[in-house]
Length: 511
Ligand code: HEM
Image (cartoon, rainbow, N blue to C red; front, side):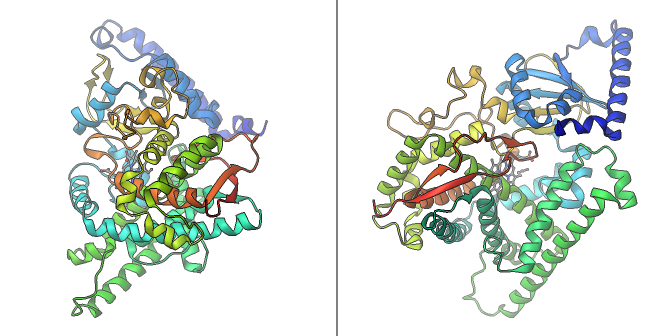
């Protein structure tokens, strides 16, 4: 019954009363206006209110998938504005591409995100977004970043394999999601700053503090979406807002110090043309970008973008493989063939063999990761604000200020999109008759968003996930520690496994 405690919460009761009042007002104003606007505009069916979302909070994505099964596009009534949810690819294409300029983060999201993400790419629209997108797209397409990041991914994959190996030898279970979160944070941090954080082994106290402050800031920023009183709490500097202020200060102090150190290092090595600076911070400094606040915003946004998304996807991937041992075996076979490595006890050697050429050959692994993202997309729902009244391709209207969301989680499970076996984990659906991966329309498979704001790190993320998966699956067999345990997500911005994923790893030894 603990999950119903929130019914007694005074904030909740106040919000509920307000919602009832709003619904009453909406009902009567609809009646009064019937002869005017209703005649001209058609609105998507009302499937519920945000009160229903609160009641279903712990199974939110199941609830919304059920609604999506009934209506391709529907509305939920909230206190201040309509919330429209769609799983219709034609509407998704319209929002994300055709009428791109009419949908964005808006002032509402910017105000929530600003204290943590500043003016970084995730928080802004318009010119500020365009400028960062241009610079970052260029950086992410360079061969230098690709090669530099691959070296780091291989090193960290081998480091993780060492930890898994120790657990396998001593027959100890592992909480693999947590390990992946730390390892991916270490990789992303090193690509971004060119410095070691080592949150996986915890060798640096400052690094540990940074990692904790980062997670706290992220969770507390998300909390603002449901806490109607956050502005007052911020003004009074109390409760969650006081904690957020402390966490962002830890982040800022740490990052500004790193930037300062890097600037000094670069000054010292100015004449040394053999010094190659390949991390993202150094690249920006070389481009004569010296505003520390701008640099902080760019880099923290990248870390946020890359860390939880990639790590959570890998955790769901391992979960899927524990549930489907034949697929696990098949991927291991493909990796062995592509890398041509016989000896799997030397993790560094094995990791170095997972090179570009080998990765290109791993179509089945690519399909299995994509299939994981179809069923467990790291961003399960993605919301935009509508900037001016509009009509969707399905003929229904949306109003200025409405929140419009496409739903990767629900879409991944719709039979009308994927067929009768939509709920089944079947990597083969991504392969043609020759076993070659073939992508789907990004307006149907929406895990990376689509259109001009499509995920900038998609290729980077696949490379990292494939390297980690290839190294781990060549050396170990993974099984659930407790096969009967029900695995579910925790409702938050990204789709994490609630309580982590406890697995048992077994050595494959030389086969
Ligand atoms: C499995 C891994 C990943 C998934 C599923 C994913 C998914 C997404 C999604 C859904 C968005 C749109 C978010 C929004 O509306 O604001 C996005 C944006 C973005 N992603 Fe990823 N992402 C992943 C990994 C990465 C990585 C590793 C990086 C870079 C290190 C990255 C960089 C970005 C950036 C910079 C944006 C903002 C693009 C823009 O607004 O123009 N992502 N990603």
